[in-house]
Amino acid sequence: MSRLVRKRSLGKKQNTSVLDIGFEDAKKIKELAKKHPKKKFMGVEWVKKSKLQTRTHNLKLTYGDALSKLRRLPSASVNIITADFFFSEFKIKGRELSAFSLRKEMSEKFAKRKADTLKQVSRVLAKNGRFFVLEYGADLEKTISLLNNNGFVCTKKPVPKNQMDRTYFLSLIKDRMIIDARNASAWQPFIITARKKPVSNVKH
Ligand SMILES: C[S@@+](CC[C@H](N)C(=O)[O-])C[C@H]1O[C@@H](n2cnc3c(N)ncnc32)[C@H](O)[C@@H]1O
Image 1 (cartoon, protein in one colour):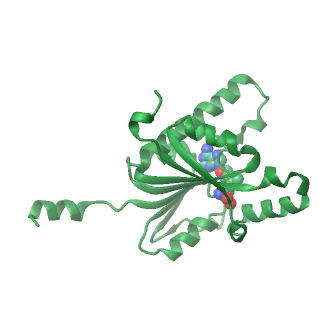
Image 2 (tube, rainbow, N blue to C red; image 1 turned 30 degrees about the vertical axis):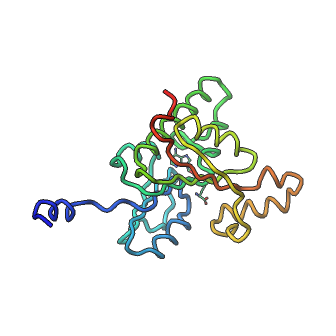
Image 3 (cartoon, rainbow, N blue to C red; image 1 turned 120 degrees about the horizontal axis):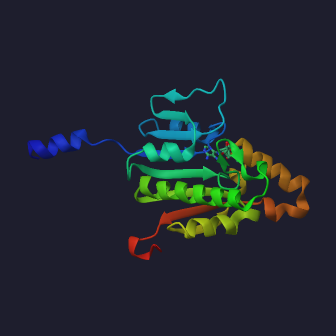
């Protein structure tokens, strides 16, 4: 190997393996970071939790807006991005759409912000990267359309039963599916696997 090639490969920065947007209590990303000590993990969340350890040797959790965080990351620098129930509980400056009067311009603002966030997800994802989105049955098709309209192709499958205690949020949904059995299909969570469309297929 020539000295120049060796120098370049030594200087190459390691990609982040997983970035979790909207990590809340960070249970899942912390577990992953523990299981894979040689890989790099990151998370961003709007709501600050006191007493949550935000740094370990391979995990960096930051507080703030997902879009601002994504904008600061280099292109093609993350292999997997996860967003659990993020789009159905999407916030701008810490407030969900339901907190505003249902004015048309507000829902347009939210739609634009989600699209801008997805543009950044697409930029930050590595070439064969994957974007995993968890979503309730009731919001599934809406979220898939959002992803399709912003340059992703998607597949979906129900979250397997043995994964339903993986996060506090999933265990709450599991309870809801029992307590509110009539609406179990609306609560049923799905995993959406989204990949970037090949550039020639992206609508402009
Ligand atoms: C439904 S919770 C999911 C929590 C966690 N991922 C889980 O499954 O246990 C969605 C999280 O996304 C966060 N969130 C929503 N919009 C955000 C945004 N624009 N920037 C950062 N965090 C956001 C919320 O504060 C909330 O904690």
